[in-house]
Amino acid sequence: MPGSSATEATTWSNWAGNQHSAATAVLRPTTVAEVVELVRSAAEAGARIRPVGSGHSFTPVAVGDGSRMDLAGLAIDVQVDVDRRLVTVPAGMTLRQLNALLASHELALPNLGDIDAQTVAGAISTGTHGTGAAYGGLATFVAALTLVTGTGEVLHCSAEEHPDVFDAARISLGTLGVLVDVTLRCVDAFVLRAHERPAALDTVLADLPGLIGAHDHVEFFWFPYSSRAQLKVNDRVPADDRPLPRWRGWLDDDFLANTVFAGACRLGRAMPALAPMISAVSARALTERIYTGRSDTVFCTPRRVRFVEMEYALPRDTLPEALRALRRIIDRLPFRVLFPVEVRFTAADDIWLSHSYGRKSAYIALHQYVGMPYEPYFRAFEQVATELGGRPHWGKLHWRDAASLADAYPRWQDFQHTRTRLDPHRTFTTPHLTALLG
Image (spheres, helix red, strand yellow):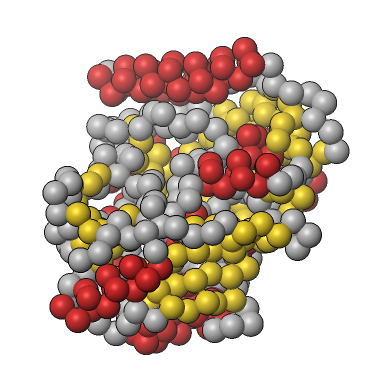
């Protein structure tokens, strides 16, 4: 079989170490024609293929029971149209590589999340997003894509060409086919001014409407067992005139946020009673800072402390109620929470399986340090979020299934029809996806 290897290790695990699989073979196609042949062979044999990115999802979305397909070596010509601000890249390219490519052409993505290790295909297919009330997730920047369907057909999709597939495939969890290239709509390179400061949680919540309206990008972290939050706002400015000193970047982002925080988490895992004190100290350790930098260097930060995560997109006006319930849940848990709670915002969009389909969203992300109990914590908040109309992030832990998700997505049945048409043999399904999507 072309592009396959039976001799290399077939075991796989994700970044957090909470998901594992053993593939029957590892497929490494180097051309689109090889992808087509591999898919057709699998369909004829009744076998399954699971495309896998960089492993930054916490769910079993990349866990399959057949062959694993790695697209890192796929030869796709990179095309950069500076005048039209469009870039076409291999779906297996990482966001870090993409950001460097765009910067070399004085372009940038309009918005990013805080991790840049994901592949382009993985990031858009699971609904990866940043924060900014006027901005959708990364999938909303997709202008076109090329998909190898479950029948081996190569479809070039955009708003003009196969628009129904385009609306489904931008966030599809890899169930419609293999994404081989993606065309992204970019903007001119820009500079961000970041203002990060500690604040009282109640003050942040009271000021949120004004903050969201006044700033391009707003997020905050609440530290459990405390009334403290860390507020972060980013705004576009004309000049990079206040760069962060290298020593300050190392101190805050490398030493405090990673080295020291990792030590504090290990201590909290060994002595859970210290968790409230650790949370309070962490909240006080983060001081105010203002700096400017190239957009992607401000959006993205190093994350080396391992954790597991659940994130829910909620109708924006339900955020205060959700946070009140979350505080009660944390106070009643029989174990301690060592990570802060993150809150972000996105605009509404029209992608069928987007968490923000048809509505402005507030995202609440729960984290727990690896090795600590988390399921009762996550499940308790999931019940609250579900009752408030929440939709789980496709790449973050949750326990929803097809029966409970169908009513949450107005275009759910349209997606199912498209999936059946494009992958009639369910070549790209897995046990997890069968439970999740039916």
